Length: 263
Image 1 (cartoon, rainbow, N blue to C red):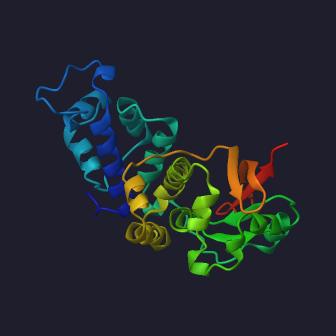
Image 2: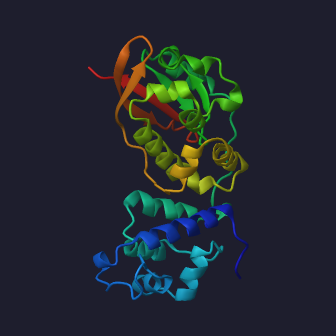
Image 3: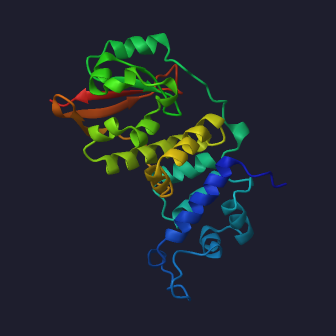
């Protein structure tokens, strides 16, 4: 029995289609496509190389809620030369809604986590799976003063990256940073696209930001990695931090983001 399409399966189908069309035939030892202008692989070629039926793979790209095993997805990922992050991403998208625990909705950080970030003398804040900022400390307010006066509806990190001119000015390489943030958001939130809260974040940005629309269509996926970050501070000039993120063991739906000063 083929179940109705779900937003997560639709995302999976669109992602696989984009990667199939961008695949290199030469890397797979395949001859040039018979028609000039054809690029990438056909669905039949992916199915053959992955050892699955062409009908099954077609249904997968169509976003149908069919049975999918990790072993088969690994074969598809191998054929499409997906990165480790991308392979993990499609595995999450292939899960059915009843395989995943219900999302926790939070409007404020737990008190013990707020006390934790308050005790830090460097910028730190707390975000939900939708990237809503639900807590921050004085040092983060020093770095980004607007956080204290924003409406709660606008206190979303991805929304601010794409719509707040002040935050955009703080990022010396906004184009690179915004794409990296979006790739990380997709890696984390893609498996929750069936939830109204995550869809609302994406749909609001699609209405308000042309840059977001263009970047979102690139379908980039990247898990978070600690790294150095530069910010342009309004009075201190360029400041550099190490960007870290921790997941509390007793609140795994939250991330504590920290900007540790570089000596």
